[in-house]
Image 1 (cartoon, one colour):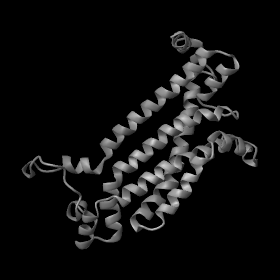
Image 2 (spheres, helix red, strand yellow; image 1 turned 90 degrees about the horizontal axis):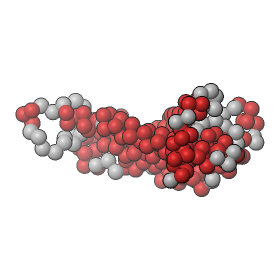
Image 3 (cartoon, helix red, strand yellow; image 1 turned 180 degrees about the vertical axis):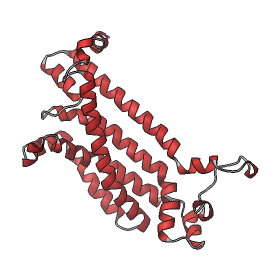
Image 4 (tube, one colour; image 1 turned 120 degrees about the horizontal axis):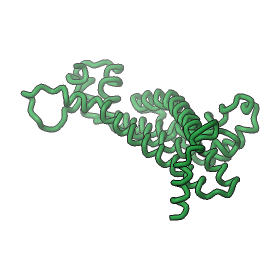
Length: 244
């Protein structure tokens, strides 16, 4: 309890919320690391996973290759990248390490979501004359959307936690608060930094859960149903509804 009380005191001290070493500045750095690496990871992983899931070929190999990155400790990868010529580009080594760490959950969940899309619905859409592109965009991706967002959410939360390691080789973010606490042997500051990271992770997960619910195509279709069609189970996006 003494550590928690000390952490609260640290967090409520005004000087800790000012300047380049203050919480707002470190929080913005942390959000930059997280947001940039997550966007790049999605830009790389989603097209590959969705395409391979639609084709049903090569997905297992891609998933296994992407998961190799999980076997390499992130701190070790950060240390290796920080001694390469990339170090002259500032935070690039940190972003590369975080992107490699974020790709596996995004790629794996998106691929599984595409492969687990209801085959009867997919075949019905094809049987009604929908092209491969229409089946891909209007049926398979719609059915895979919940798992796709689960992968993005998992990657985001993991990246928030892992980005704290960026402070060890000299990067920014909330991890700098924790490392500074270790250097000063200030346990309260270490706990305060950990609490900030945990709160950010929980807030981001809640935001992505809400975004997934609002953006879910299946939920939007259900809301657009006319009153005369009843209040039973939500519509399955068959070929006819997918083209609507």
